[in-house]
Figure (cartoon, each protein chain N blue to C red):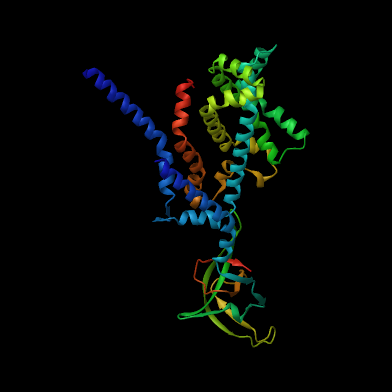
Length: 128
Length: 256
């Protein structure tokens, strides 16, 4: 019994020390790193950089970001929003790097502009 | 004979029921910590240590406070216990009576004087505020005195004759006799300081970074509470299991 307890204690201590040193690093490195910005509204048109529009098999999507304060850091969760329409910026206001997008219920939410990895709905991400 | 068996069975049943009552929350916490959103596994621990990575900062705070308080408490209480048990001087019994009096006071009675002292010394909201008041334990002095009283006076006198030094007598004649007592006391003090809540809340109101895990445990997210509770309980349970025989031995031998 004592041997088992000693082994468990050593394993426990090893795990605690490992996560003490690596916990924060793992938090940031195991999540996709994203750039976040708000869309630009001109009139009733919503402008986003082209990199914010993710082309997938079943359509075009953008990812909005919800921020909440966690126990140790801010927790950013992405929500996938299907675009109803998107077109090149023909107004000349912002240039060829921007697109005019339309999505249901989407106006001014913080949006993923670019991501280090492909995203899925509900993923947790880190800004950077 | 039948009556004796019945009595034995009844006693066993009551003790089993009480044991189950005590172990049920511990077991439930531990078992539920191995599931996350209905799926079994260690993911709750991953969430605890990675997503809530500052949990371990408070864990190490608790380890630091409990270790320092235990070590210093024992260091201070050993010579004091010897003083009250074996050395004769004027006013010994009166001073010991004051120790007992202070020991019997509830924490709330000494809270305000402690707070005022710590404030005046500029120690509030520092680790010293959470360790210093608990380092001076009348309970430890009382316990060690009781243990040391069982050491024969003749042994002390003989050692004093041989060494001509109180310190050497204490080191070579007294200390080896009370090793189980020291281990038991260390475990009891460690457990008490590991579970400190009131002192941390009051003496560290404006500095959350130095709080021990016992205070923070209620603030961790719900989805990792079982894992957090299990990690919190683990050191104490391991200590008890490893030193159970020593604890039982000293409690039995010295009628604790």
